[in-house]
Image 1 (cartoon, rainbow, N blue to C red):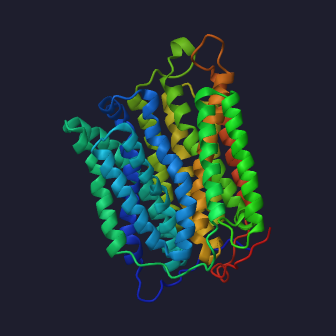
Image 2: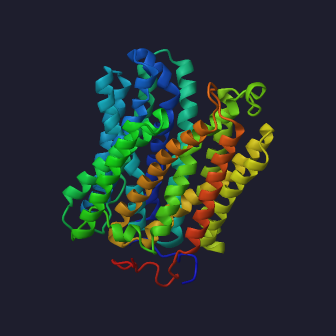
Image 3: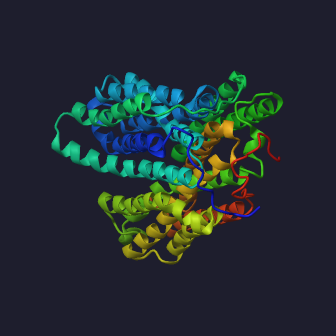
Length: 481
């Protein structure tokens, strides 16, 4: 099939694109704001609660583990009972979690509050399903691109705001109440301004499947966290083995039941499998390289022979270049796809992201070169960020858009966690006995792995069978294995 642009199909009667997308855009801005706001404040929160640096890392980890369970479950329930209904549940959970966190109760209660913020990760999959249910074609692609760009833009705004507000306000409680303002507006939008989706999938809820998937994801993420922090010792290996055994049993169960929690055959099909593979590899690089970038920049060249002894501000500036240009790329992919086709946009995005990593392998002795590599990678990853979920929503069965996008989000997160463990092992393998810093070979290896990951993405995207403008809306309920 040819890679033609999506047609400009009119929205569902009586529903305008503005009514569907306008308030959802603010919801994603709020989602990004919440995600970006807390990390700069972790030191102050740890001091207030009088917990160690190791303990406070669970502030973010608990949220990630909660998201691993919530995303596939709420996304699937959205396909069954309505995406707006599940989005309402998710925004209320996040609001309660944000408010409890702000008042800084004792450490265990705060961790419970962080569990309630986990459903934040399912906002985007549910919103993509709402958009694709109500809007088609070029307008849907543009809308999804705006949602993704607002998510990344909100994260930048949250990070900047945390620094500004904390410097102006003495009360940490007041500082932590700021995200609640954004979430409250999101609650209003979802309850009073966003229409419900109309498509429903008529299936039984696979309780065993969801419980098995949740347990497997949590155990796997704990194992990957142990690998990144403690290496591949006995505890790490046993945890990962248990996770893989649970996953294997879960797959066997899903293949046998008539209404699986996740359609494994769809996930590995030729129709959407390449998108999921790209999502995993993309997540590896996008999330897994953030820590190596920081440590490389902070390294003292007089001691290690590389690095720039850069301050946290300089490291933040490099990451900001990637994030800002990714925001731009996600926002503009749709009009570019209209001219050259969405497959070409994805290939260009993956090629730019690979080029950024290769550029960094060749040139990394000047800070200017690092910024150039960041800019190239950022715009490429932005095109992927916007185009991948938009295309997935078009290719997935119309009554499975929520769970299809939810799996996409989960795979990106899983890819980042896996890369964190692998990249930590790579750096450790290039660290001499008695030394704290890796040799430059460790970072070059990471950049090479990242470039190879994007090259695999290019190959995977090239195999996609994208429908023509005449039949891309009529997605069958069954797919090729």
